[in-house]
Image 1 (spheres, rainbow, N blue to C red):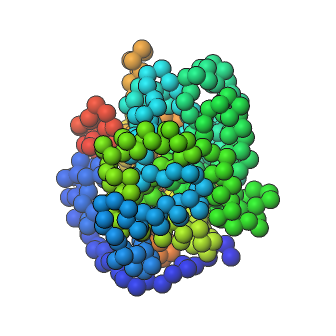
Image 2 (cartoon, rainbow, N blue to C red):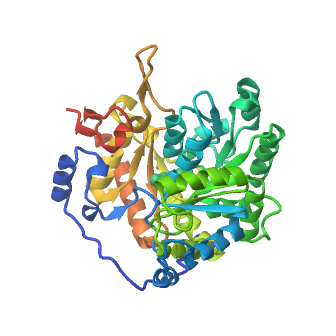
Image 3 (cartoon, rainbow, N blue to C red):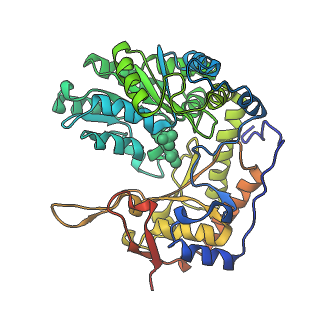
Length: 458
Ligand code: F0G
């Protein structure tokens, strides 16, 4: 079945209000046309992120009631540790309250000025954490990943020649670790193949550089390997995950994605000494090592979520829901990044609104129209987020891709709601010539997309 139906039924519902177009016009004006400034109860379908927005199962909610809130040695920690070890296979597990704290612990311990961290593509908080500690974050995804129309089974792969050239140029002593982000969020939620993970590990290890996986969407990545890579069709998601992590020396994880919870994360490692250093730092900034900034009940929900996410019926439905939206858009000729990845559809705003130049934020024009037309919230990943001034020439450098991400929360929206989203996008596509560009009225010096204010160009 191409698009398997939901493998769950609904036990609890959360009403969502509808707004009128007039209300949405006023909301947008108040928000400075930045959807980050819109109160969530003014939104009908919220596709801002798939992070921390999952619906938990009855089994997870039942686990919440079994939370043991002891400061040290909570039983939920042991369940969490056991589950992480079963799937990820690393010797040590340090809980954190979300993914970027796992990154912060690791990078603040081992990075300093002059060091370089290669990755297929760093997610923005990962890059920011690398740079904040003085090091350089280098993206080495394969060139084909930058072509939105190129269909490849594993468009998240790292380019091994570029990786080797970087090591040669930089010197292994200046590269304390290499990373792979699975799936590659910044590059369209595209998977990395088992062969690429294996070869990356082999190359890095030949220079005695450890490999750390950014594992947020590991189950979605494993599902793509099962479906697309020769030799894996008969393996379970657990077996595939075990193999993926067997090549690595550790991982950072935001459980807010494939942990199917609203908060939580961890770092898992084999290195005893590094773990001890990180644990000492954890106590300083997050808490005792058996809770790491989380309540016992949260650890229980993660342990249960990590088991549930391995279910093939769930993954087939999940990835199918994303693919179905892509197929609907394809039939109507709407441009988007192909193939669809694991957690989101990324509209190609550059082609969608070819009449709006990058200096006038086509991605913002599309994001604003999605809200105005249909009450849908998406996020711009384009010029507002990434354009920057070249200090040497004084000219503005625009990103290659101008995208609008529709991230799909896990187990939250029904297929008919997704159908509504696809139809709304198609309606907007038909009247795209009427959309206009925007200009900034306020921008912060860093990470401006979160707080920027804009107005329609006259
Ligand atoms: N790594 C990747 C690949 C991510 O996508 C994210 C978060 C993080 C690390 C950080 O995890 O939020 O728990 O601190 N991505 C979210 C998103 C925010 O919308 O894509 P966190």
